[in-house]
Each structure stands twice: as C-alpha cells, then as structure tokens.
Image (cartoon, rainbow, N blue to C red; front, side, top):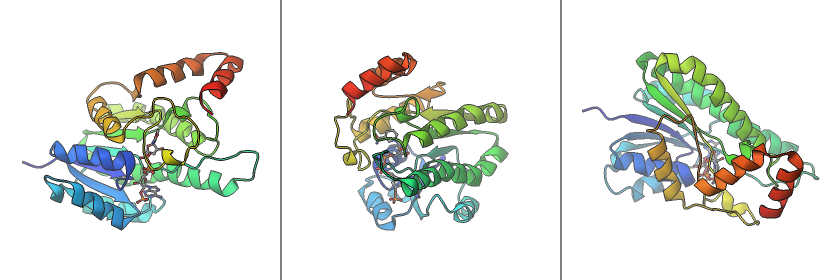
Length: 247
Ligand SMILES: NC(=O)c1ccc[n+]([C@@H]2O[C@H](COP(=O)([O-])OP(=O)(O)OC[C@H]3O[C@@H](n4cnc5c(N)ncnc54)[C@H](OP(=O)(O)O)[C@@H]3O)[C@@H](O)[C@H]2O)c1
C-alpha cells in the first residue's frame, strides 16, 4: 500500500524533527527540508523503525526554484507542514533592520515559497492538509519579539484567508499557535517562559490536533488560554500583565 507523504519544512531540529519522527512512527513518508545536511542525516540515524521513509532534502526555504524542483521529484503530499522558522530576540531600541528583514524572508516568504512549490500537486489530488506554524506571538506583541511576532501574525492571517479557496478544493487548512516549546530557538530567551513545553509532547499534540476539525490549535492549554484572554483585554491591562509575567 502506498504511504501518505508529508512535506516538513524545518525538519532537522526542534518541533519539525520531533513531528517527523511521529509521522514516520505512524507509517508516513516524510520529505524533510532544511539547510543543514549533517543535522538531517543525524535525525535519520535516530529514527528506529522505517528510517528509509525519512527523505532528507537540503534546501533553504528562501530558494523557490529549488523547492519547485524538489516538488517535481517527490510523491504528491497528503500533508504540507509549513514549519521552518527562525527566532531572534531583539532590543527594539537598537537598529535591527537586517534581523527584521531576515525574519520576514524566512518565516513569512519562506512559507509562501513552500506553499507555492508543493500546493499544485496537492490540488490535482483534491485531497490534503496544510498546517502553518504560527505562534501565540502572532496574537499579541510580546517583549523582545518585534522581529518574530509580526511574521507569525502575518502567517495566521494568511492561513485564515487561504482556507476559503482551499476548502472547496478538498484541502484542510490549520494554524498551529504554540506557546513556549523547549527547542534551540527558545534556548536563546533569557527570561522566564511560562508553561515551557517538552518538544516531543508538543509534536504529539500537533499529531492529535491535525486529525481534528479545529482551524487553529494552541498549547499548552492554560498558557494559551491566558494569552487569548490577555489579547482580548483593554491594552493598558494586557500590557501590564504581559510585562509582569513575561520578562
Ligand atoms: N519553540 C517554540 O517555543 C515555538 C513556539 C511557537 C511557534 N514556533 C514555531 O515553530 C517552528 C519551529 O520552531 P522550533 O522551535 O522547532 O525551531 P528550531 O528548533 O530552531 O528549528 C527550526 C527549524 O527550521 C529550519 N530552518 C531555519 N531556517 C531555515 C531556512 N532558511 N530554510 C530551511 N530551513 C530552515 C532549521 O533547520 P536548518 O538550520 O537545518 O535549516 C530547523 O530545522 C518555527 O516556525 C517557530 O516559529 C516555535
């Protein structure tokens, strides 16, 4: 029987790596895309069963041409997991223009590149699913997240919009907006991260939620609930609470 194929951008580390392992465990074929060949091969070595179903592709998500050529080579995806991303905390009282631009190029344009490259085959099949990795940072501006947060807000809006065109074509769209997950990205934070979640647990939750009919899903439960409430409060109160709890 043919395997279901998933495209995972940012598969070499963190959430993408943990989620790739879960999909392989559940019998999927994973096309794992990221820049670092050594990390991709290392990940393949750690997969215990069916490691041949992990197919590493070295590619920068900024490179649309290469993504299109990968798309031609691989099986029609049942799932496109738009996950590759970077995070640099910034002090916005200083000049950060290169950091701002790089976040937009990788986190936002990189997602659009993967989307454009892999969507056409999925459309032909009239069946599939797209998960966009946004973040709670996309709901409300958080300290040190002036480069990162706006890209995640843009991704959420992108997901909200594309679903209207794609649902009628048999494609389900979901946005995943986690709080803090323990990865090399969050290891850069020097502040207290409420509800910091283990990466394997986060990947399990993504696997569980991808089978649901929710458009957006978020975790950990309590932290995301608080942040949702914060985002609905009057600004004076929400900014006070954020300063007090995340800094
Ligand atoms: N960790 C959290 O708390 C958290 C919370 C909310 C949302 N998220 C989102 O979840 C996603 C994964 O985050 P993470 O914490 O797992 O980060 P991570 O551990 O730093 O992993 C990021 C992945 O993206 C890849 N990547 C980065 N730039 C790339 C590029 N230009 N082209 C191709 N691949 C690239 C990296 O691989 P290479 O270095 O090999 O290219 C790596 O595999 C991100 O979109 C992030 O914004 C994370």
